Length: 258
Image (tube, rainbow, N blue to C red; front, side, top):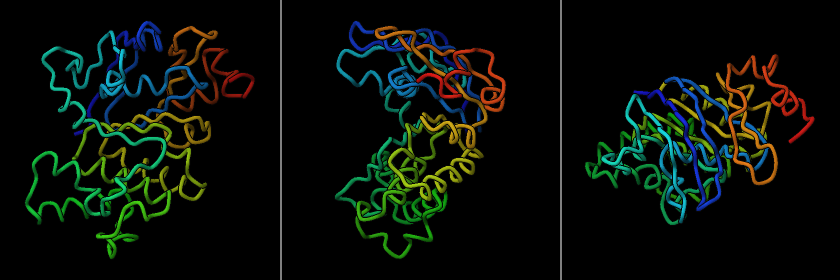
């Protein structure tokens, strides 16, 4: 079941450097939220804070509360592995496991979770690949390496791998930036379908993409070099792109800065 995400004063550090400061936002279940803003404003840092991937980096830490259906994922007694299992992630560049087959790429997470029954794994592979709109293209070559697919197919394979474990939240960090326009359109169509099952948060530098795929948009920015990233405005995507409340948002949307 898709989850509700609430950020309350989320602040992230890289050692002594404050990357984002006091981010407050609520992301509703079964919706697509786009995070936009200039490079270095903290979009990806906030995204990685949702599934506690930020703290993997040496010296990195978070403050504030990040609630998934009311549970703060930063509570001391929270199982970090369980959090990351619940929150799938797709990265900027397709990263299928190069030595694994298409089949083994999809079920890698399930195997880590202890699933061994072949019929269960077979069903999960077909369901995930169908969910990623990739089944018809690869069903006859499942034993072949995932790295042998085209870039767009590899990214959809990574999406299939992420959704095979049935997460409730799906994070996407510029998932189309390395893809051609046709592959990008397929991913965007897929995002629109997947939001019926997942809560999706996507970081993108593509304004048109944010306008096309998201229900709500958060604009992040920094005032000057060395300042932390802040959430300047967060609203329905249609309002952000047609009638933003903040001049800084309007300047970014229209290309006057950033």
